[in-house]
Image (cartoon, rainbow, N blue to C red):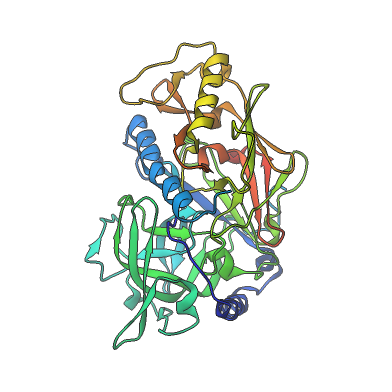
Length: 446
């Protein structure tokens, strides 16, 4: 989700090691915690907006997505098992086409519901005083009420985890500014705090001395129920990087429930060695390292609509790392030429009359029968990793009885694999091996 290009000096390796050491000392207390933990995810659309009409939720999800792919590819990227039984579990909840993680911050702990974003690095929340902040339903986090809150000093190695920091005189606090391609922005102070994750297994996991952004000036596309953002990218300040090998491996996995799943059913997210994805049906592709260390970049060779294969590029030349796997973007976004060919093939094979609804233009939409009669799409990634996208992932209910193609186009040369397409797959990110694995899974039963 972050739009800026970051550069990291060698000095960060020292700081990074210190962060991991301090977090490891605070968490590795039992065999269970050493294997990792799993968090529940809430979906942005259901649990916080029960009264919002489906068409509005769908439109909001698409509207927030357009700027992201433009900013990321124009500014950042060079163009050319089931869950382990020993893994502690917590939830991710759905909300407005995005997924929200509940994090307890500080001492005593304070509940924060923050967007889960694999496309950015910084974890931040709105903090008091917060005179220039977007409206928030719940009370904002007050650092003065926490006995474990500590400002990050400036200059310091921790302050250099971001390249957009400055020293505030005379306090010598580490001020930060962090922007997103959607034109959202957070400004505040880098600090360290204690984070606690509620566990589906009943045993909370506590991480101490985590660097985060205490945001005093925040604006953009956030709604009143989103209290911040959890950056899960590969950069040194991300939660994944700070945890390091505390739980046995630099790994995490996600199992996202589909759009419009009842709010009582949460998604799951696991961290550590217990989150490894393997077993029958698992396919694996390599991560591609380009200019920006944040993004999970993979190479999409093409997509099959039923039995018809369509290459990513009609010219035959396919750039490595042409797709970002991003939980913070709902639709899948691809270059315009590729999208036009996909849409034309979908129209050809779907033996139904498209529905032209003024509220949903220009999306390709059909009646409810499309989820039964529509084609299966298969995404073909490098390494013969073929990921089948079910109709429930490719045709999303935008209004009562109207289902629309959950992809859209961009004039950028690359694209984003959005969270609609990620649903009902157990997806494992292995930073040590630089791979991403996909396993078909009914995430509502995890």
